[in-house]
Every structure is written in structure tokens, then in C-alpha cells.
Image 1 (tube, one colour):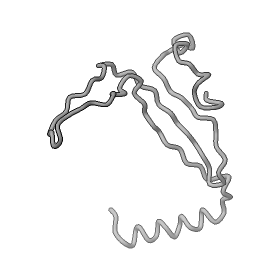
Image 2: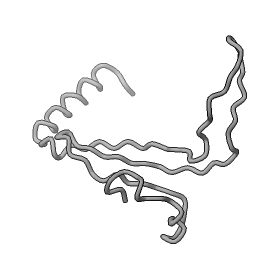
Image 3: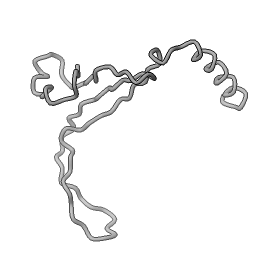
Length: 103
């Protein structure tokens, strides 16, 4: 249960732990999903329209990007997660035009 005492104690402990760590030891990662087909073009509509239908496909093909950076500003190569069970199934993705050093 969260209350002022519990939260205060958490941040006191966090302060003692982080004082012992260097900036190269503190990492942050963010998961970002990208839909490969859902990139709608501009659509014209009346001003004030409540609902505007888009012109997009019905596929749900996604990839997930996992960039990771530490407190010193160093970064790992972006990790890309795509649907597929074998390396052969991933050949359809153009990795040469992706982020540098992506895996």
C-alpha cells in the first residue's frame, strides 16, 4: 500500500543504491511498436466532423523496436522483434535501411 512513509523510504533507499552506481551502469529501455501497414494518407473532412473514416489496410503486421541507452549517453544497437520463427521468415524485412547496427 502506498503512503507518504512508504514512498519516502523507497526514495531514501534508491538514493543510497544509486550513489554507488556509475552512469554507465544505469540503463533505460523503451518498447515501441510500429504497424507496418497502418500509415494513413491525409483525408479531407468538413470542419467539426465527429468521425472521419480513414483509408488504411486491415492487416495487423507489427514490429517492435527496443532502443536502450544508459545515463552516460551510450546506446546499445536497437533490438528489433518481428513475427517469425526462423531466420528465413525474416528475410522479407529490409534490415539495411533500418537503424544502424540493429539486430
